[in-house]
Amino acid sequence: MFYVKPLPFQATHSLGPLLVFIIALFAFTFDAQISDQLIYNRHLVSSGEYWRLMTGHFFHSNGNHFMLNIAAVALLWALHGQYYHHKNYLMIFMTSALVCGLGIHWFSLNIALYVGLSGVLHGFFVWGALMDIKHKEKTGYLLLAGVILKIAHEQIYGASADVELLINASVATDAHLYGAVGGLLAFFWPYFKGNQKQKVSV
Image (cartoon, rainbow, N blue to C red; front, side):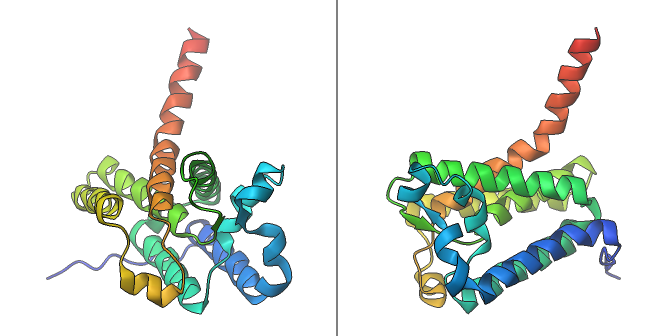
C-alpha cells in the first residue's frame, strides 16, 4: 500500500501560502490600476524605485500565468508545507524575491520588465528539497536533482515555447536560477547565524 501524506492544513503551515495567494489575487484583479507603480522596470529601479525588486513578483502577464503560479504555490505547500511557519515562509520569500530581483537587475541586462512568482517558487522548491534531505526523506534528493536539471536545461536550451505561448510572454529563465540561489541561501542562513552566535559567545 502507498502512504498518502496528509495535507498540512494547520494555520501555522498554511498562513504564508494563503497570504501570497491573496496578495497575488489582489495584484491580478487590480493590475490595470496599480501595476505601473509596482512591477519590475529596469529604468525605474535604476532611478531609485527599489521596491519594485520585491513587488513585481506578485504580478502576472495574463490569467494563465497567474493560475500556473498559484497552482505551483499550492503544490509546494502540499509537498513541503509541514516545514512552513509564518516566520520561515516570510524569510524564504523575502530572500528568494530579493536575490531574484537583484540578479535580474545586475546580471540579466536584457530583461527590462519582469513579473511573476516563478523565480521565488524555484527558491521554495530548492529550500523544500533540502529540508526533505535534512529530515532523511530520500525524495529530497530526487527533487533537488530534478530542479537542478530543469534550471540547467533552461540555461542551455531556453524555455518551452508552449509555456511562452500560454502565458503570452517570454519566460525569464534567469529568474529561476536566481530564485533557486535565494532558496539555497535561505536554507543555509540559519546555520550561518548559529555559527556566528557561537563565535561571539566563545
